Length: 399
Image 1: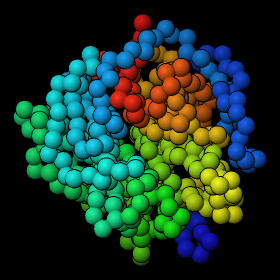
Image 2 (image 1 turned 90 degrees about the vertical axis):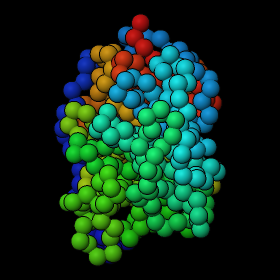
Image 3 (image 1 turned 180 degrees about the horizontal axis):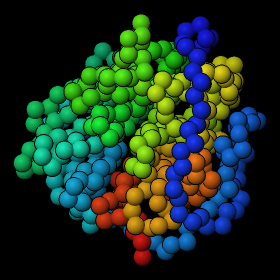
């Protein structure tokens, strides 16, 4: 099916070293439960890697319980935390957990199901231009993922000169799987993860280059396709597409050491993935997956590996529901350059140790808290800040 529609792509996992600190002694995999399928990984270490355990003493403290359906979080230049709320507002909190400001002035959102006001990020030149960017479920004749920007007012209570710079297509009446995360590359352009919208009658659009659902999008701050995008000039392909074949990519992060783009997404039953994103890459969904349907049936032909598609660096079965992702840049040496992922159904924070762009160790943090971890960031003070669906804000700090 792919060869009739798309150019074959020979894309592997780049072997670029991620310098990691000394690891703790590895042990048995953290996952003890039976997988949903008998599917086999494509290579050793692609799933159920050996466990690691943090040696550095750290504390985990609840610093706020007042958040309302938090979804995105970003540390401001002065260290305070900008946090989005799905109903349609944002708040600025101090690192002590005090709500400092509530920001209004956002376009109407479809606050339903998985929709609402979603991710938030700030312009790389925020200290000069005070521009904020965000993703949201845009209502209308069918909802869609949209990206907007606006200038934070001098008193930090509202957005000014708001404009929408991107809308995913096609629109769809459902309320599921919008994605979405928003990150800036080193050139100041934007990557956005766009979900497949979940339903069987639209999810195949993840393989359709004339649609922008189920894709990684690469645009300028004005919403234009970035020059040099892989499908520029290709007939019946949207020039803003950077990579395709994704289900519900709720995590997106750039490795600060080399600029590599990483993504994590929800599978159905099994098949949650971590991917290293390459321009033009086809990541397979919905025809190539390590997951099965919620009914227990195969997804289409039940294919896990296919020429012309990119294998995940790592996958989970059973799922953990990876709701967010970041590269750690704080002050705990053994965590440096590790991937931290907020697990929703898994109710823990995943720590993945990487070497040569492969996962070499996995740890589950804060699994005793019984929380769904929605957004996570490294603060300017070197601590980890993570918010939960229950409205709590946690601070993880070195003792």
